[in-house]
Length: 247
Image (cartoon, rainbow, N blue to C red; front, side, top):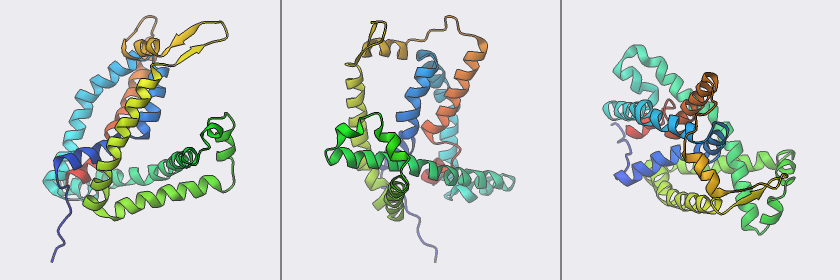
């Protein structure tokens, strides 16, 4: 007798889980860095155009493949076209490859969270704190495994009691934190060595308004490729995630 596949109990759970796989380190950490590096508004414009065209197409396609086949990414592509079996293998290899990367950085996050909760936030804000931590012999590895165990616990509990349950709890918290950080960033002021003061509102203007003045074709191509790469992080495509969620 075949075991019944677990599914999300509702649309909210699916949306929260899908957003949780996308709105993570790739957007909170990497996105602002790329936007600052790639002329702010120009990067945002390229990203949005790619998201509503190329990204939307990929996203809906992967979800549709999962819905149609009801299989894991490993076998879903082959179920549609036997010649696509290799795509399923590649889609499953990507999460395996990036898992150690995410566990290391996730360990950093858990470490800093524990530091702030225990009242040592001032020390953690120091310039040398992070360098001292990552150069330690055991601490980075210990915190990496703590994060790995936490992640494994959620996955082990399955779709309903694991991924969906914790996504409904953690995603609203993350949204609250992002809004708080965004509002706080608008109040920041910085005066450089020449005495020029820049505010968060000025940064927001650079962030939102595209400025192509003086930009070369090569620079624009680099920005376009950065936006394309960020898109894959943002919507979790080409990793088998949306195929699995759609199934």
